[in-house]
Length: 365
Image (tube, rainbow, N blue to C red):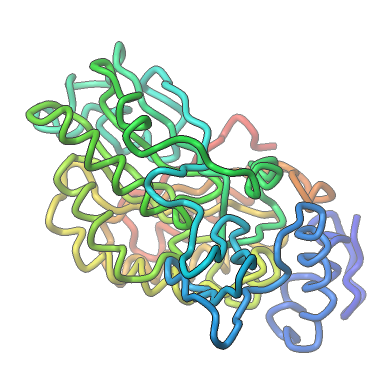
């Protein structure tokens, strides 16, 4: 049980690591952020990651994501992967993927499985092999070991130990891993953003190798990429029958900073842009969103605001609400309760969304 250092409130849904309740983060963010920032910095120091985005005035511009890092010789970007070497940025280029991959039998536990061809058969016969779940086929799951966020609740935080390692998987080798039984490639992590150059190249090669067949390209991302990369990833998913899933972690920028260490402005703006294009293909859906229900912080107030934002763009966009379990720096919070999940689902439906899904229901208490 934590106690808010600002208002003195206590309860199981206040993290002692964060130190403040949601109301005090929203209401007194400027005063309370320095203490929360130190938690983020300490969590990054353990992995040798930069405490803030490098901005050397005459450094080399990376330009892949919202941080716009400018790196001096030998400096690494906030993602921990991209670095300056001579007169160029290395790390995450098409021949140096820092990743782990595996072939998973379909249907998988993918966040988008409730609305994708691999899990439901939607889009058959153009984008799916069967009218139902694609049993007998596989998904090439590509986990990238880098990320431009610093989520204190990260469910896959172990990747941070490998971010600084040299990548050795070429885009060509990754594309070859998608064999004749593979019907989709999904990029996640970490996050694909710091290695988009690698992922885009691998996707194009895999699609070329299976021309005339089914090879969906899907993305699970925090949405922090520079806007110029939205069109190529969108086009790959549009043409292939794949989808783009953005993890909308919070609506309040203050709550987002507290949980993830960074702003959510780029994510929301990129989502807005993609929503304007998503009507180009309805079956299967091109764009969807998910939110992890962090107890005490991502509540029906946050979910309702996110859902109203999504509904204002397109009420048909699918939205998945995911149960939380303690991980990384937030091991002092409880698993999401059924009451929390149901109140958040109700808030999303009341906001006008047509397709709201509860994920990880086996965790709910």
